[in-house]
Length: 104
Image (cartoon, rainbow, N blue to C red; front, side, top):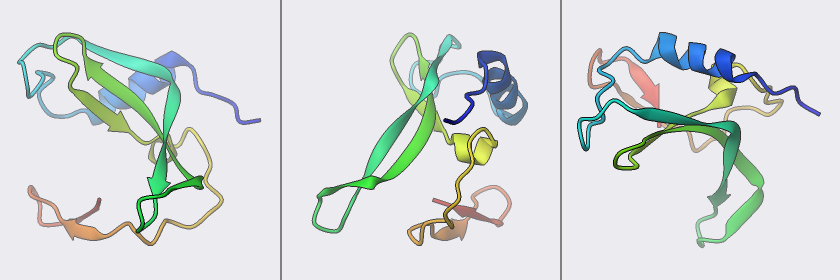
């Protein structure tokens, strides 16, 4: 069974990475809430059928005022291990800020 990181580790990681304004882009408030433990989303195939073995974990951080939500991937954060290779659906695209590639 995986060991889950404590709340302070998750908050510390987000705090060090969140370099832009803390204002919500929808309502302008700064009251964010983080959901711990992590949640998960299922993938869909080309026919729209959910694929139960393709699960994407996330921590959600949402605005307490309007509900706008940001998702953080605990695999990228280093909190869980993924023994599989990166999914082929990850397509590099140019970054708006630096021209470097980023995955979407």
